[in-house]
Image (cartoon, rainbow, N blue to C red; front, side):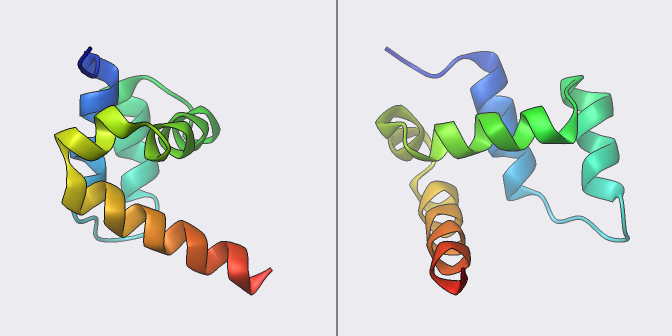
Length: 74
């Protein structure tokens, strides 16, 4: 089973670079029609999904490393 359109769009958004404060949140609202809170909930669940890893291993592994760094700082 493959990732859905929304899951692929979330990973695509994470591959992009954003300049300026609020640019990413604006893109989340305008392109995905999600609140930033919901977006990050979905993204966090997606990082644990092996289908996401198979689809975009570079992005998923990068985000997993960032998540683990943040967890260890707490």
